[in-house]
Image (cartoon, rainbow, N blue to C red; front, side, top):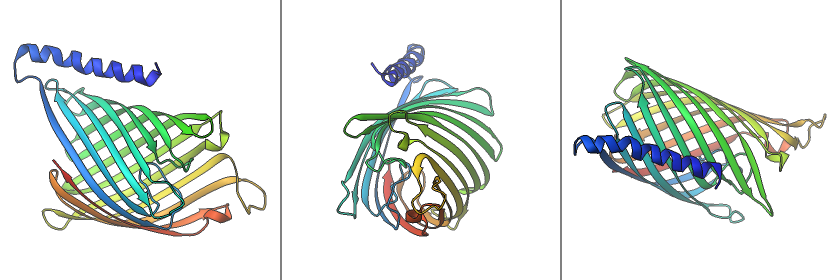
Length: 306
């Protein structure tokens, strides 16, 4: 049994054990609330590669998620979810992408202002930066949250393990560290700062090894009860351990970055129909002549939350 299978089993056992005393006390002490979400998306982009789970190449896709939220007590909660998605690329030379997976998490309030969440997740055929065919990814992470009044600070640490399906199975592993500060100014009115750094290493295929840093500032301005305007500015930089930049006079390893001003129009509330229209212009810089042109991306997502 792989380590992540044992981990998922352990987390599931912890959820069941935590819920057992609650069920024994009263019939109402242990509750499981089902949730579901389905969405349809259209993307038009100049990009010819993927970044993370947000598919930037042009095409259309659908996604669904079903979960159960468990109330294990006044300060303890858990969630189990399964998800799946399909994306049809406009590029006829690329195969359509089907993804599926699941996650389990446990949350614990430490005090009135501090909470901790442990989350384990497995997803098949996810789009990633370092491999165009995608990868199967397993992750386990912890999130520590501090919240007081209108201020919220979150710190994340996730361990990632990926498998690439080539002629032989190739593995990589690494870490993703992140911090987020959110200042609430009113209902759906907030200012958010995000900073993330991640790295992946592969002894099987050093070309899969990379480092990436992402920083973003985003502002949400309510226009009506259900409509918000969200401008943002994003900076990304990434480099590879074993990829020589084409056209670089010194023959250095490839290094890329971009600055991306963008904006969204978001409609909806916590439940019911929702929609997001987004646009971003990416001012790119690379020492590889193939990736040194600016790109433009627009997208539309329409969905329903139950």
